[in-house]
Length: 177
Image (cartoon, rainbow, N blue to C red):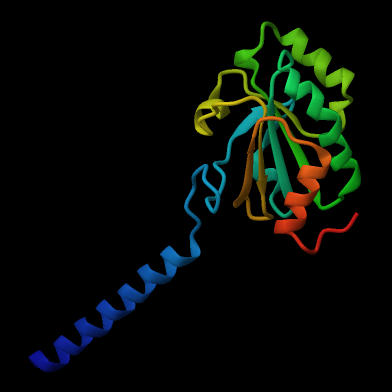
Protein backbone atom coordinates (compact mmCIF):
# COMPACT_ATOMS: atom_id res chain seq x y z
CA UNK A 1 0.00 0.00 0.00
CA UNK A 2 1.52 3.29 -0.98
CA UNK A 3 1.71 6.33 1.28
CA UNK A 4 -0.89 8.32 -0.70
CA UNK A 5 -3.65 5.70 -0.29
CA UNK A 6 -2.79 5.20 3.38
CA UNK A 7 -2.87 8.97 3.98
CA UNK A 8 -6.29 9.25 2.35
CA UNK A 9 -7.69 6.41 4.46
CA UNK A 10 -6.37 8.02 7.65
CA UNK A 11 -7.80 11.41 6.57
CA UNK A 12 -11.25 9.93 5.84
CA UNK A 13 -11.28 8.11 9.18
CA UNK A 14 -10.27 11.32 10.99
CA UNK A 15 -13.09 13.26 9.28
CA UNK A 16 -15.63 10.56 10.18
CA UNK A 17 -14.44 10.55 13.80
CA UNK A 18 -14.64 14.36 13.94
CA UNK A 19 -18.17 14.42 12.53
CA UNK A 20 -19.23 11.73 15.02
CA UNK A 21 -17.83 13.70 17.98
CA UNK A 22 -19.52 16.92 16.81
CA UNK A 23 -22.90 15.26 16.23
CA UNK A 24 -22.76 13.41 19.54
CA UNK A 25 -22.05 16.61 21.45
CA UNK A 26 -24.82 18.47 19.66
CA UNK A 27 -27.49 15.89 20.49
CA UNK A 28 -26.64 15.33 24.17
CA UNK A 29 -28.09 17.71 26.74
CA UNK A 30 -25.79 18.98 29.44
CA UNK A 31 -26.98 17.78 32.84
CA UNK A 32 -27.20 20.58 35.38
CA UNK A 33 -29.51 22.89 37.29
CA UNK A 34 -29.51 25.93 35.01
CA UNK A 35 -32.13 26.83 32.42
CA UNK A 36 -31.33 24.84 29.27
CA UNK A 37 -29.72 21.97 31.19
CA UNK A 38 -31.23 18.53 31.50
CA UNK A 39 -32.35 18.22 35.12
CA UNK A 40 -30.35 15.70 37.14
CA UNK A 41 -32.20 12.45 37.67
CA UNK A 42 -32.69 10.95 41.12
CA UNK A 43 -34.66 8.18 42.78
CA UNK A 44 -36.47 8.78 46.07
CA UNK A 45 -39.10 7.04 48.17
CA UNK A 46 -42.70 8.24 48.10
CA UNK A 47 -44.88 8.74 51.16
CA UNK A 48 -46.65 5.52 50.09
CA UNK A 49 -43.40 3.54 50.38
CA UNK A 50 -42.63 3.13 46.66
CA UNK A 51 -39.59 4.47 44.80
CA UNK A 52 -39.81 6.95 41.94
CA UNK A 53 -37.30 8.64 39.68
CA UNK A 54 -37.66 12.03 38.07
CA UNK A 55 -37.04 10.33 34.72
CA UNK A 56 -40.22 8.27 35.26
CA UNK A 57 -42.16 11.38 34.24
CA UNK A 58 -40.32 12.14 30.99
CA UNK A 59 -42.76 12.56 28.15
CA UNK A 60 -44.85 15.01 30.17
CA UNK A 61 -44.12 18.58 31.15
CA UNK A 62 -42.79 18.39 34.71
CA UNK A 63 -43.32 20.94 37.45
CA UNK A 64 -41.08 19.93 40.35
CA UNK A 65 -41.66 21.69 43.67
CA UNK A 66 -39.41 21.42 46.72
CA UNK A 67 -41.05 22.13 50.07
CA UNK A 68 -41.09 21.63 53.83
CA UNK A 69 -44.12 21.46 56.14
CA UNK A 70 -42.97 24.35 58.37
CA UNK A 71 -42.47 26.67 55.38
CA UNK A 72 -45.34 29.21 55.29
CA UNK A 73 -44.87 30.12 51.58
CA UNK A 74 -44.94 26.38 50.80
CA UNK A 75 -48.24 26.05 52.67
CA UNK A 76 -49.72 29.00 50.77
CA UNK A 77 -48.68 27.78 47.31
CA UNK A 78 -49.59 24.07 47.54
CA UNK A 79 -53.30 24.65 46.78
CA UNK A 80 -52.29 26.51 43.59
CA UNK A 81 -49.91 23.72 42.60
CA UNK A 82 -52.67 21.16 43.14
CA UNK A 83 -55.00 23.32 41.02
CA UNK A 84 -52.36 23.26 38.26
CA UNK A 85 -52.26 19.46 38.54
CA UNK A 86 -56.04 19.27 38.27
CA UNK A 87 -56.18 21.70 35.32
CA UNK A 88 -53.53 20.38 32.92
CA UNK A 89 -53.35 16.71 31.92
CA UNK A 90 -50.02 17.23 30.12
CA UNK A 91 -48.33 18.55 33.26
CA UNK A 92 -47.01 16.22 35.94
CA UNK A 93 -46.57 17.85 39.32
CA UNK A 94 -43.77 16.22 41.33
CA UNK A 95 -43.28 17.43 44.89
CA UNK A 96 -40.15 16.74 46.90
CA UNK A 97 -40.27 17.11 50.66
CA UNK A 98 -36.96 18.29 52.07
CA UNK A 99 -37.23 15.78 54.92
CA UNK A 100 -33.72 16.50 56.15
CA UNK A 101 -35.02 20.04 56.89
CA UNK A 102 -38.12 18.81 58.76
CA UNK A 103 -38.55 18.71 62.54
CA UNK A 104 -40.03 15.23 62.16
CA UNK A 105 -41.47 13.04 59.45
CA UNK A 106 -44.97 13.09 60.95
CA UNK A 107 -45.30 16.82 60.14
CA UNK A 108 -44.51 16.12 56.49
CA UNK A 109 -46.95 13.19 56.37
CA UNK A 110 -49.71 15.38 57.87
CA UNK A 111 -48.95 18.07 55.27
CA UNK A 112 -49.33 15.55 52.43
CA UNK A 113 -52.60 14.29 53.94
CA UNK A 114 -54.01 17.77 54.61
CA UNK A 115 -53.38 18.94 51.03
CA UNK A 116 -54.39 15.60 49.45
CA UNK A 117 -50.95 15.32 47.85
CA UNK A 118 -51.28 11.54 47.69
CA UNK A 119 -52.86 12.20 44.24
CA UNK A 120 -49.48 13.28 42.85
CA UNK A 121 -45.92 11.99 43.05
CA UNK A 122 -44.87 13.17 46.53
CA UNK A 123 -41.27 12.17 47.16
CA UNK A 124 -39.16 12.32 50.31
CA UNK A 125 -35.59 13.64 50.23
CA UNK A 126 -34.59 11.87 53.44
CA UNK A 127 -30.84 12.37 53.22
CA UNK A 128 -30.75 15.76 51.47
CA UNK A 129 -29.64 14.18 48.17
CA UNK A 130 -31.90 16.33 45.98
CA UNK A 131 -31.28 19.45 48.07
CA UNK A 132 -27.56 18.97 47.44
CA UNK A 133 -27.93 17.91 43.80
CA UNK A 134 -30.02 20.99 43.00
CA UNK A 135 -28.02 23.29 45.32
CA UNK A 136 -31.23 24.28 47.09
CA UNK A 137 -31.05 27.77 48.60
CA UNK A 138 -34.74 28.70 49.07
CA UNK A 139 -37.97 27.04 50.07
CA UNK A 140 -40.09 26.68 48.14
CA UNK A 141 -38.24 26.21 44.85
CA UNK A 142 -40.04 25.17 41.68
CA UNK A 143 -38.54 23.93 38.42
CA UNK A 144 -40.43 23.69 35.13
CA UNK A 145 -39.08 21.08 32.70
CA UNK A 146 -40.01 20.08 29.18
CA UNK A 147 -40.87 16.54 28.09
CA UNK A 148 -37.16 15.66 27.95
CA UNK A 149 -36.41 16.94 31.48
CA UNK A 150 -34.74 20.08 30.14
CA UNK A 151 -35.16 22.97 32.59
CA UNK A 152 -37.09 25.84 31.02
CA UNK A 153 -37.86 27.86 34.15
CA UNK A 154 -37.05 28.12 37.85
CA UNK A 155 -38.95 29.94 40.56
CA UNK A 156 -37.22 30.67 43.86
CA UNK A 157 -39.86 31.38 46.47
CA UNK A 158 -43.63 31.26 46.51
CA UNK A 159 -45.60 31.06 43.27
CA UNK A 160 -49.27 31.16 42.32
CA UNK A 161 -51.47 29.29 39.86
CA UNK A 162 -51.61 32.39 37.63
CA UNK A 163 -47.83 32.80 37.62
CA UNK A 164 -47.27 29.14 36.81
CA UNK A 165 -49.94 29.18 34.12
CA UNK A 166 -48.33 32.24 32.49
CA UNK A 167 -44.87 30.66 32.61
CA UNK A 168 -46.16 27.40 31.17
CA UNK A 169 -47.95 29.29 28.36
CA UNK A 170 -44.73 31.16 27.64
CA UNK A 171 -42.80 27.91 27.13
CA UNK A 172 -45.51 25.53 25.91
CA UNK A 173 -47.93 27.17 23.52
CA UNK A 174 -49.66 23.83 22.84
CA UNK A 175 -50.97 23.41 26.42
CA UNK A 176 -54.71 23.13 26.77
CA UNK A 177 -56.88 23.01 29.87
